[in-house]
Length: 252
Ligand code: NI
Image (cartoon, rainbow, N blue to C red; front, side, top):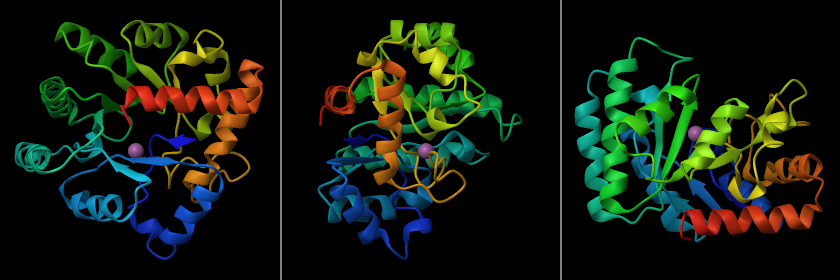
């Protein structure tokens, strides 16, 4: 299995990162993709990806950390691409749940990073909280819809899911799929497994039965199990297909 989105370099893992990593490997995880947050997380992210073949870095500025100094942040982050190899530009996007006041600069930062992705030939890992349709519109109106990538932690409607797939993007599915009150199971009835990758978003969004606790890459099996139920396919089949999807999408 490949956990396509985990902040394993986060402080939450400082006391037992090695153990968490070993646990993930024992559970059959072969790659863990690390999305960046902002300037302050770059060094930790590189340290971890340099020390483990399993951990693979992305680079980008997270929408919740887009503030008045975002141009400086973007300059620092773009320079990283000259020195390091990444599998995606991420995580980037728009978050209207935590802060609507920065919407305009979030859009600018997102579009600029999408253009980098095109320049570098990399997919994007999108954070789209309360903004799925806005992001779809932005990509289309800026002729960026074919840049490719994943809507991480997809939380949109059936219609939005169809549009995302039509643009050639994948849906990142995580712990939310295991929650009792989610509409995601119904949405997935309309999405082929060919467009699904699995993720944890560790340390956040732990799946049932760990909901509310610290999430970790090993728990991605709970997402695969739930997909097995949703698609009515054997677990082995789900694991193989979602792994193949991730290998192709991120050219791992
Ligand atoms: Ni994230």
